[in-house]
Image (cartoon, rainbow, N blue to C red; front, side):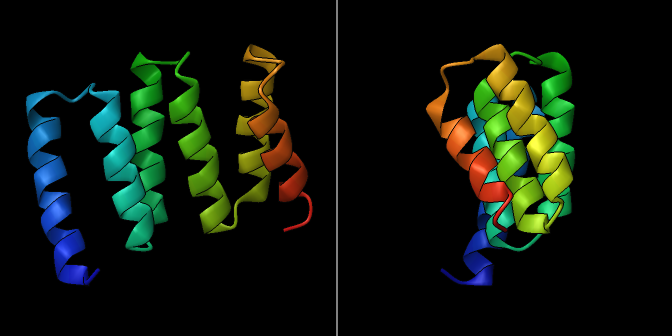
Length: 104
């Protein structure tokens, strides 16, 4: 994909979020798009804002942890992964990601 395509996608996501700012599916996709562009800060900001209204959404938390990882903020990543594990102690993926964060 080219930067131009990511920019078009960003415009599309911005339009969708203007209509429904709490749509977690759009938020997740927009966050992934920002990460693919290397704009991890924008992804983190969007996800943190979404978690204010949806604090129990573990998928948003997982995406936030991933964004922190991509930005090299491993302590923040681990904090979010521990929150996921606390909410869902059987979440094997969170344990796996947490162990991987210590080898990064």
